[in-house]
Image 1 (cartoon, rainbow, N blue to C red):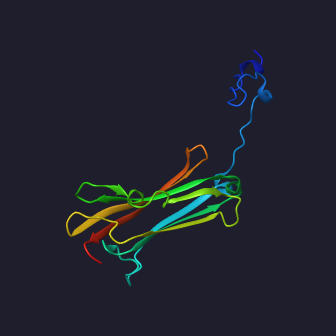
Image 2: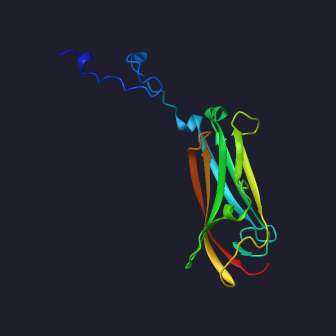
Image 3: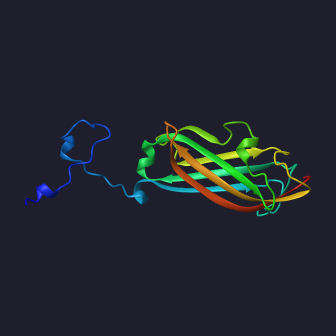
Length: 177
Protein backbone atom coordinates (compact mmCIF):
# COMPACT_ATOMS: atom_id res chain seq x y z
CA UNK A 1 0.00 0.00 0.00
CA UNK A 2 1.34 3.47 -0.82
CA UNK A 3 2.35 5.94 1.88
CA UNK A 4 0.03 8.72 0.62
CA UNK A 5 -2.95 6.36 0.73
CA UNK A 6 -2.70 6.14 4.54
CA UNK A 7 -2.84 9.92 5.11
CA UNK A 8 -6.01 11.38 6.55
CA UNK A 9 -7.84 13.90 4.39
CA UNK A 10 -7.22 17.51 5.41
CA UNK A 11 -9.43 18.93 8.14
CA UNK A 12 -12.21 21.05 6.68
CA UNK A 13 -11.56 24.78 6.72
CA UNK A 14 -13.81 26.99 8.81
CA UNK A 15 -13.25 29.88 6.39
CA UNK A 16 -13.53 27.89 3.13
CA UNK A 17 -15.58 24.78 3.97
CA UNK A 18 -16.51 24.00 0.37
CA UNK A 19 -12.97 24.10 -1.03
CA UNK A 20 -11.79 20.48 -1.38
CA UNK A 21 -8.24 21.61 -2.14
CA UNK A 22 -7.76 24.06 0.71
CA UNK A 23 -4.11 24.94 0.14
CA UNK A 24 -3.34 21.21 -0.21
CA UNK A 25 -3.94 20.91 3.52
CA UNK A 26 -3.03 23.45 6.11
CA UNK A 27 -0.05 23.95 8.38
CA UNK A 28 -0.34 25.27 11.92
CA UNK A 29 1.93 28.15 12.87
CA UNK A 30 2.96 27.76 16.49
CA UNK A 31 3.76 30.95 18.38
CA UNK A 32 5.76 30.55 21.57
CA UNK A 33 3.73 32.38 24.24
CA UNK A 34 6.76 33.50 26.24
CA UNK A 35 8.01 35.44 23.22
CA UNK A 36 4.78 36.77 21.75
CA UNK A 37 2.14 37.08 24.49
CA UNK A 38 3.34 37.23 28.06
CA UNK A 39 1.05 38.78 30.71
CA UNK A 40 1.77 39.97 34.26
CA UNK A 41 -0.88 41.51 36.48
CA UNK A 42 -1.42 42.82 39.97
CA UNK A 43 -4.28 44.20 42.04
CA UNK A 44 -4.09 46.07 45.34
CA UNK A 45 -6.48 47.64 47.80
CA UNK A 46 -4.89 50.88 48.93
CA UNK A 47 -5.84 52.45 52.26
CA UNK A 48 -4.56 55.99 51.84
CA UNK A 49 -5.50 57.19 55.34
CA UNK A 50 -3.46 54.57 57.14
CA UNK A 51 0.23 54.97 57.96
CA UNK A 52 0.67 51.19 57.74
CA UNK A 53 0.22 50.48 54.02
CA UNK A 54 0.16 46.71 54.69
CA UNK A 55 -2.86 47.03 57.00
CA UNK A 56 -5.93 45.08 55.90
CA UNK A 57 -8.41 46.64 58.32
CA UNK A 58 -10.61 49.42 56.94
CA UNK A 59 -13.44 51.52 58.35
CA UNK A 60 -16.67 51.47 56.37
CA UNK A 61 -16.59 55.29 56.29
CA UNK A 62 -13.05 55.43 54.88
CA UNK A 63 -12.25 56.16 51.28
CA UNK A 64 -9.94 53.60 49.65
CA UNK A 65 -8.65 52.79 46.20
CA UNK A 66 -8.33 49.63 44.18
CA UNK A 67 -5.45 49.62 41.72
CA UNK A 68 -5.22 47.18 38.82
CA UNK A 69 -2.09 46.85 36.71
CA UNK A 70 -1.47 44.71 33.65
CA UNK A 71 1.94 44.48 31.98
CA UNK A 72 1.98 42.93 28.53
CA UNK A 73 5.13 41.72 26.83
CA UNK A 74 5.56 40.45 23.32
CA UNK A 75 4.99 41.62 19.78
CA UNK A 76 1.60 40.04 19.26
CA UNK A 77 -0.08 42.36 21.78
CA UNK A 78 0.49 45.22 19.32
CA UNK A 79 -1.99 43.49 16.98
CA UNK A 80 -4.75 42.96 19.54
CA UNK A 81 -7.70 45.15 20.57
CA UNK A 82 -10.49 44.69 23.08
CA UNK A 83 -11.95 45.74 26.41
CA UNK A 84 -10.25 44.99 29.74
CA UNK A 85 -12.63 44.17 32.62
CA UNK A 86 -11.53 44.24 36.25
CA UNK A 87 -13.37 43.52 39.49
CA UNK A 88 -12.96 42.62 43.14
CA UNK A 89 -15.09 39.99 44.82
CA UNK A 90 -15.90 40.04 48.53
CA UNK A 91 -17.09 36.94 50.40
CA UNK A 92 -17.95 37.39 54.07
CA UNK A 93 -16.41 34.72 56.27
CA UNK A 94 -19.09 32.82 58.17
CA UNK A 95 -21.98 34.74 56.61
CA UNK A 96 -23.91 35.01 53.37
CA UNK A 97 -23.80 37.98 51.06
CA UNK A 98 -20.96 37.77 48.52
CA UNK A 99 -20.73 40.68 46.10
CA UNK A 100 -18.60 42.18 43.35
CA UNK A 101 -17.37 45.71 44.00
CA UNK A 102 -18.44 46.69 40.47
CA UNK A 103 -22.07 46.11 41.50
CA UNK A 104 -21.78 48.93 44.05
CA UNK A 105 -20.25 51.57 41.77
CA UNK A 106 -21.41 53.16 38.48
CA UNK A 107 -21.36 50.91 35.38
CA UNK A 108 -18.12 51.09 33.42
CA UNK A 109 -16.01 52.03 36.45
CA UNK A 110 -13.99 48.80 36.20
CA UNK A 111 -13.52 48.75 32.41
CA UNK A 112 -10.80 49.96 30.06
CA UNK A 113 -12.86 50.27 26.85
CA UNK A 114 -11.53 50.15 23.30
CA UNK A 115 -8.00 49.20 24.31
CA UNK A 116 -5.65 48.95 21.32
CA UNK A 117 -2.30 47.24 21.70
CA UNK A 118 -0.76 49.39 18.98
CA UNK A 119 -1.41 52.66 20.85
CA UNK A 120 1.57 54.30 22.62
CA UNK A 121 2.10 52.93 26.15
CA UNK A 122 -0.72 50.39 25.61
CA UNK A 123 1.33 47.51 26.97
CA UNK A 124 1.20 49.04 30.47
CA UNK A 125 -2.41 49.23 31.67
CA UNK A 126 -3.29 50.82 35.00
CA UNK A 127 -6.79 51.42 36.33
CA UNK A 128 -7.29 53.06 39.72
CA UNK A 129 -10.82 53.02 41.13
CA UNK A 130 -11.73 55.30 44.04
CA UNK A 131 -14.19 53.68 46.41
CA UNK A 132 -16.20 56.31 48.31
CA UNK A 133 -16.89 56.11 52.06
CA UNK A 134 -19.97 54.00 52.88
CA UNK A 135 -19.70 51.78 49.79
CA UNK A 136 -18.96 48.62 51.76
CA UNK A 137 -21.92 47.69 53.95
CA UNK A 138 -21.41 45.16 56.73
CA UNK A 139 -23.58 43.06 59.03
CA UNK A 140 -22.86 44.13 62.60
CA UNK A 141 -19.92 46.20 63.80
CA UNK A 142 -17.12 44.09 62.28
CA UNK A 143 -16.99 41.80 59.27
CA UNK A 144 -14.11 39.87 57.69
CA UNK A 145 -14.11 39.18 53.95
CA UNK A 146 -12.14 36.85 51.72
CA UNK A 147 -11.18 39.11 48.80
CA UNK A 148 -10.05 38.29 45.28
CA UNK A 149 -9.47 40.39 42.17
CA UNK A 150 -10.18 39.30 38.62
CA UNK A 151 -9.27 40.47 35.13
CA UNK A 152 -10.35 39.55 31.64
CA UNK A 153 -9.80 40.79 28.12
CA UNK A 154 -12.85 40.58 25.88
CA UNK A 155 -12.64 40.69 22.12
CA UNK A 156 -14.83 42.82 19.86
CA UNK A 157 -17.39 39.98 19.64
CA UNK A 158 -17.56 39.75 23.45
CA UNK A 159 -15.81 36.44 24.01
CA UNK A 160 -13.22 36.21 26.76
CA UNK A 161 -9.67 35.88 25.42
CA UNK A 162 -7.55 36.32 28.57
CA UNK A 163 -8.51 35.68 32.20
CA UNK A 164 -6.75 35.88 35.53
CA UNK A 165 -7.33 36.33 39.23
CA UNK A 166 -5.36 37.20 42.33
CA UNK A 167 -6.27 36.29 45.91
CA UNK A 168 -5.95 39.45 48.00
CA UNK A 169 -6.49 37.45 51.20
CA UNK A 170 -8.67 38.66 54.07
CA UNK A 171 -9.80 42.21 54.77
CA UNK A 172 -11.68 43.33 57.84
CA UNK A 173 -14.17 46.20 57.79
CA UNK A 174 -15.52 47.92 60.89
CA UNK A 175 -18.24 50.50 61.35
CA UNK A 176 -16.69 53.96 61.33
CA UNK A 177 -13.55 55.55 59.99
